Image 1 (cartoon, helix red, strand yellow):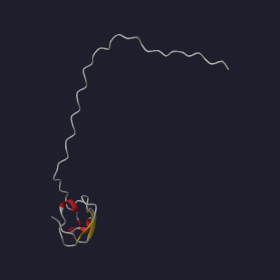
Image 2 (cartoon, rainbow, N blue to C red):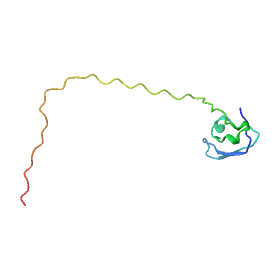
Image 3 (cartoon, rainbow, N blue to C red):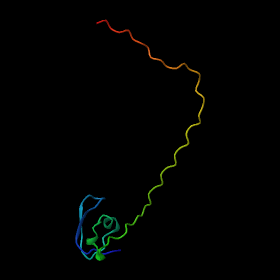
Image 4 (cartoon, rainbow, N blue to C red):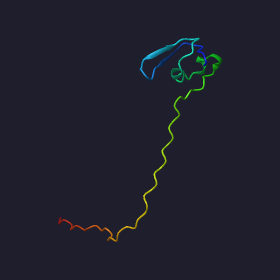
Length: 86
């Protein structure tokens, strides 16, 4: 894990409280992923984020229902309405 070169303040996504990560320490992975500024890290490069839980795969699309022939029906038409006398 990489060490911090500067003191950084981040908001913990679990408790929504501000956390101080002191210079020279190794913050926990869930907080380290929030520190994106390269100059905050020793060596000037942010560590690679650790993904403990892989993203779930997208569900496969369901097969469309089989096409069946529509029953014989008349086409729908609009009824005309008589115009009002002015």
